[in-house]
Length: 255
View 1 (cartoon, one colour):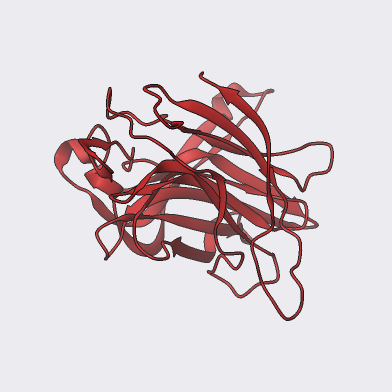
View 2 (tube, rainbow, N blue to C red):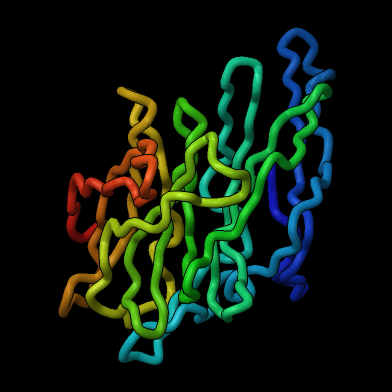
């Protein structure tokens, strides 16, 4: 089990650790079933996006209503992948950036000899400013990492984008740039809550197609629609690295 640090209710918005608990189950002798932790793993310092949840943090064009980032917590589930004997754990959350917006902080941990996690790589994806929040992460069968997230700001209605990296890329970077899954066309004005949680998952049929679901508003709409999109992370041409094409499978319409 895993959690980030800080405590919003105590106005502690910053930390420099990710915290793990181990859970052992003994079905024959339940007295030996136990949880141990937390164990701190030191990471690059971070500050909650928007100082946490239930706050108007992300501006929108043409309105004073801003959106919630849910920046006080790790998003999605703890991702576990085993490739041969190598075991990886990955998590993601939203953090404040020096530009005043928010970015996607992601980590890949690897389990060592005593099954204690250690940082293998980490990074903050925040090119060009603006706000990136509510991310979801997955790892495919080759060890490639894909992340979907919400994107918006003062000049851009909230929508959905994605990025990714290949397993063999330099550590700590998202090499594929940024792809668009759904471009926002209107502001949400009836509530600050923005979709709450999203999810990135792998298609079990090939273990390499990333599926992501997120919300956006169509032009003139008062209520959001949901976009379900899919993308793969294929090695780019040797002389040019570009984002893999996002394939928007379904526009599910209003939830």
